[in-house]
Image (cartoon, rainbow, N blue to C red; front, side, top):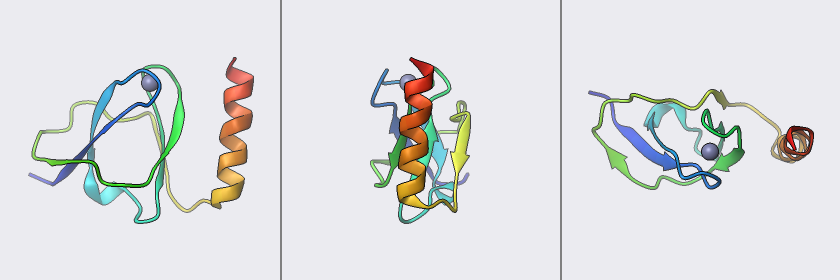
Length: 80
Ligand SMILES: [Zn+2]
C-alpha cells in the first residue's frame, strides 16, 4: 500500500488522503472537491496508510508559484 498524506481543506476542513508521491517537494496546489477552495499544500502533515478514497479534484505540478497564486486569487474572486 503506497504511503499517503492526510491533508485537510483550510476552508471547509474536508479531509483527503493523498498519495505522498503526488506532492511536489516545494508545494502542490490542491483544489477541494467539496467546496472548490484552492490552496498550496507545502508541508507533510501526517503520513498514513489509509487507502485513498477521496482525492482533490485538481492536482497541479510544474507551476510558477507567483503566477499560480495570482491565478488562484483570480479564480476565487470569480467563484464568489
Ligand atoms: Zn473545502
